[in-house]
Image (cartoon, rainbow over all chains, first blue to last red; front, side, top):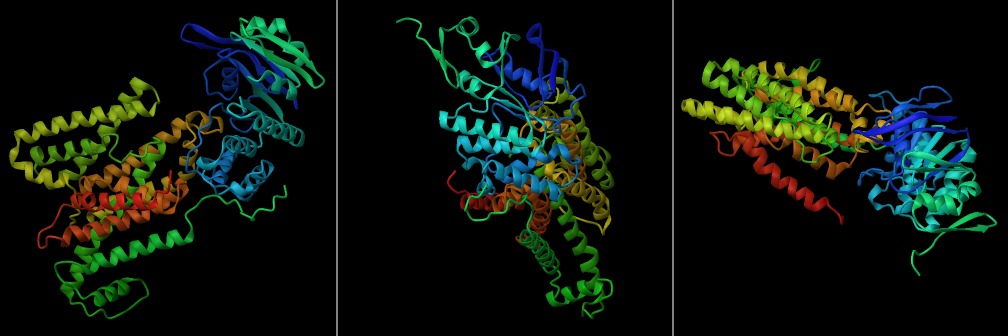
Length: 250
Length: 347
């Protein structure tokens, strides 16, 4: 279980986030939703300690070990142009290695299996710059997977992808979650897509949790209209709620 | 998954045997050329025999006279070995700086080592006068300048690499201004200082080699060991941190290592430019992107490059000598452009 306890982030005199309490059970898939600037990414970054924060993010009540317990897929990952896909994925083994140590057999095997799971084996020697958007997202996921961390934090993993590739990426994440028993926390803008995959949605607005529950409970016309500042209609579909924007003036 | 694609085994990047063999061959050939070419006109076959003879367990009659043997072992070889050490240090330090600052134009002189060493050497020439003081003063000047750069950079911009580089520019400008002032006051030393600034591999026996050797060996070992971390830093500070790397600590260790070695090299050879940029980039274009490849190969090709540059410096206008810094810039820069042009595919 990963939990955020009284986590807050301040910038100068302004509190951007929090204090926030969130608990995510092992094997659960939770989507953080909310308008731009609500603090979704900030909460995720706090969990991997790349933004200074107050409060605690812990794993089953214990201190996190950087990189070993949590794998993070940033919103805009740095993909060094000329780095090979295989080498990039192998960097995911870093938390398990001493500073001056080289990778061993097990690390290389983990890299190969991560490439295989994301269907990237035949890209292994290609430089990152030659990948398409969807392939690049898979490479970043493969690197996160190579960390063999029980918790995956994905910051808008489908940003910039068309609907087909977006579904592909999320299906892969779901498959990995089942196979490896991972806990998944994702920051998402596409509410319909988030509702399709996540067990639970947490709506963040102005740095605070304002709704928390199943997709059906959180995605209601009133809640969304209030926090997104747009007129929104929610349709019922057998697979879950569908969020539809409505023009302001007709 | 059962993709029927060609079975490409994913393997970590490393300097392959072929690349290492080419590098070692370059070092050996450059060393041989360096020992054969020179004013004394030693017979190449005899030189090779004499070198083999000096190996433990080998005994060959070289046919060199006692004077010729002395020229080879007391004059030429120390200079060749010094060239190899300085070249290796400058090239591997350049590689390290480019890695930690994620800046392809970073070079070993980036943080003010060159200007500080220049100021130290100028003080040595102008005020102390004794040539024995030049190297220690240059070493102290180089390290002092980097220390000031580091303190200044930290005080303005925390751990940001940009503020460190800008502080380096400011410190270098200040050191150069002081140096120019001292030169103005002591015009008679201008020629000596100028020749030192352009770089020179003059040796008196094996003394300089022995001074530089420990720095070169320790820096090479540490940087080769840290080569994987330089690839990690390419992910940016945040992502590197999220996979468990203390970025500030890695940067500090690598910078201190490269700087100590550079200062030691500069103190015995003066300022030899471009090696730290040309060699790593040429290696990168020829053998691959990863620092796992570039760090070890930079050591070999840096050594070979500077030994050959020294041959050119000694022979092109013989019996006079060109400053080796002029040679590295004059031949290195066009060569680098040539490699850049031929290797760059469509971006």
